[in-house]
Image (cartoon, rainbow, N blue to C red):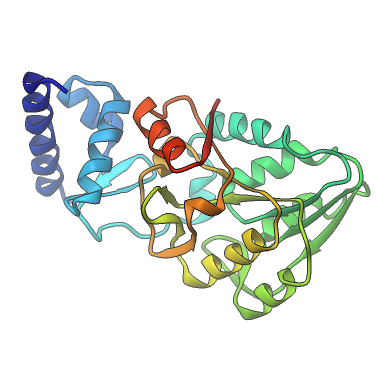
Length: 259
């Protein structure tokens, strides 16, 4: 980066922090991009840097003060980034062949994956997601195994010791994992500790792990750790993800597919 470019970026970072601190509510990435006359992808990269420094927090396309976010109910999340989630899900579905043993965590992107593989033959699907369970329960071509455990109304996921114990009984060909954040340093993370433990069990029982996450999740860190990025073979994300973000994961040994 040349000196003028670095100076301009530093000015933009300061402006973002000032606007976030002056606002009572989190600000949309698109709004910040319009105010600063740059692309939304630039704002995502800038705010990822600021989040690592502890200056801001990011969640679902918004930027706010550190500690200012709470988990959104799954019903609200379902309406966000639908086109990107559909493309990501279709790419993930290509990795699932007939007869596979598949683990699916909860989440709106993994629910889209479940829709994309619903017509496959002789699949066995192990999941802790009530939403995925409801979607696949009537499919005679799929053997469905729900993990059991305590249900969380924010995510419609089953979690806790009962869920972990059930998952540990199985061997899986592939685990397709939804996350609230994935970062090279802090790994794959989510909001809830019990959910993280359950998701980690799916990762540990799978021969291959694929993370499905739109670009808003990349570079973010949630409260509870699921696994390290070294446990992940592939991240499937959308085409708004920057070359710099991709290079960071590739350097860490993780393949990245943009769709």
